[in-house]
Amino acid sequence: MSLLEADPIYKPFNYPWAYDAWLQQQRIHWIPEEVPLADDVKDWKTKLSNVEKNLLTQIFRFFTQADIEVNNCYMRHYSNIFKPTEICMMLASFSNMETIHIAAYSYLLDTIGMPESEYQAFLKYDAMRKKYEYMLEFEESKKHDKKHVAKTLAVFGAFTEGLQLFASFAILLNFQRFGKMKGMGQIIAWSARDETLHTNSIIMLFNTFIKENNEIWDNEFKEELYSACRTIVELEDEFIKLAFDLGDVKGLSAEEVRNYIRYVANRRLMQLGLESIYDVNDNPIPWLDEILNGVEHTNFFENRVTEYSRAATQGTWEEAFTENDTNNSSVNNLKQSAIKFILLLIIMIFLSNLASSLIAYSVGHFIIQNTYSIQDITYEETIVPLWSFRLPLLLSNFHALACGFVSSIVVSILLPKKSKELSNKMLDLTLFILKTFLTPIIPIFVLGLALKMQHDQVLSIIFKDYSIIFIIIASATYLYVFLLYGAANSFKITSWIASISNMIPAFITAMSTMSSNATMPLTLEGSKKNVKQPDIASSVIPITASFHLVVPAGGIMVMLPILEKYLKFSPEMLSLITALYIVFDPIITSANVMGNGAFTMMFTKLYDKLK
Image (cartoon, rainbow, N blue to C red; front, side, top):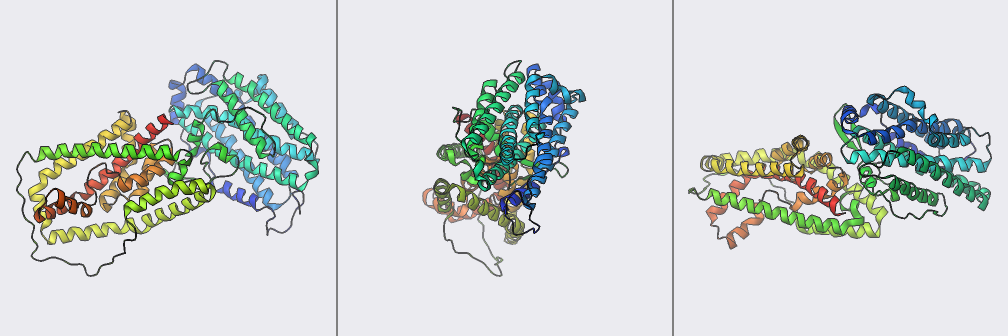
């Protein structure tokens, strides 16, 4: 059985990786209308400079046509050569997705008002026409010998989808960095993710074809591939020169893009089993990794966000060139800079806790300027639980957190590939348990506790004697958190309000559950919307939920012995502070959840600057 022979039987698969690629493409399907472009129209008319408009126009003129030619290769060339069912399924799904790309680019161009005459404007420019004509040499060739088949796979899979398109992706995604053309950025990010899947899979097809027909893998054929790579890079150089003919733009220069395509070309050559030929070893535009690390799929009609957990590009593009990575989780996402990440996180948590503690002390000092009598809380008749369920404490929260820190670093270094799969499964299991079991039953516990306190006449005493204190502390707490969001958004009103709105579901859940950990799934969801790098939020939120207290409180049961021993609290004072803590817990927890969201935004900005 070979790639050139049809198998009448569906299973077992001879090329299971092709079925996996087909399945992955189905899981990340999208359509252009899912992306709102109203703001892009405004940006095009009011925000973009003439230089930026010229750059985008030059890219747009050939962008749609490039994917038309790629799709033609799938439909007119590959489909006539490769016969196994799973291979045909893979190629058909890729071809279908190319039609989505074509429609999406057209949808974008039509929306911003580019005339239809621009669709053929590429023929007027030598740099674009030469790229087009070079593609046609392979599409229209009548050759079907094995060397030509393999060369076409390399040219279209590695050097067109995997190289030429990525130069345009880099240019277009640069606008998203500065808050411009965000809808376009979303379309391009999804397209880049799709093209990475296509490139890796077609290169896998190439390598399999070479393995089955090893006689064609000679020095002459290798030199043909090197020559094709050089030709495409040279054509791309001319195109980049044309695109930047009015000059560089903010955040990106023509020279950086030229170096980037050579960096990508080296990786594609190595994937094909060849040697690198360009002296560019490091990614000249590393910010592209950061943008594409958080590729999300927004369901526009349901107004919710679901991550492409099985296909979003994670890590760096260098890793994507060798395998299709799945989502990483927690500190494992940032293993290449784990030490810097953890040190900065610890320092910022310490400073944040210190600041909030000083503010709490100041508010407390203000309160005690007035004299409040402490009424002893006695219990004549109490409600006792009908039954109790206690799990043994195998490991304290602190030790569990410390073990998680150390394990994530050690395992990600020693077993990077396996650690990704393991951490993903553990994260999915944890979030499933929290969402499905813990979060729904906590309100029942809170209701029972409130009924008990009312029966014991604790609530009436607290609200009668300490309502003013309650209002002062709650007001100071929420004002502090509100100002944190202002600082995280540079006090820009629109983004300030939007970031708080994204955290409202987590706020409401925290109020009802009184548990930062139970609220963590919603805290994660809101925080990811507020930052450009969701992988950082995935790392910061689980840690801050455990020991970053934007509002000083902590587990009162842990603090009672300290209060009694070092601050000389009497039994009556301990009873009072315990009761107060229970009443304040919804305020404390909701403020912590909101504060952790603001902290994540501030941490992400500082981490970006220090990288």
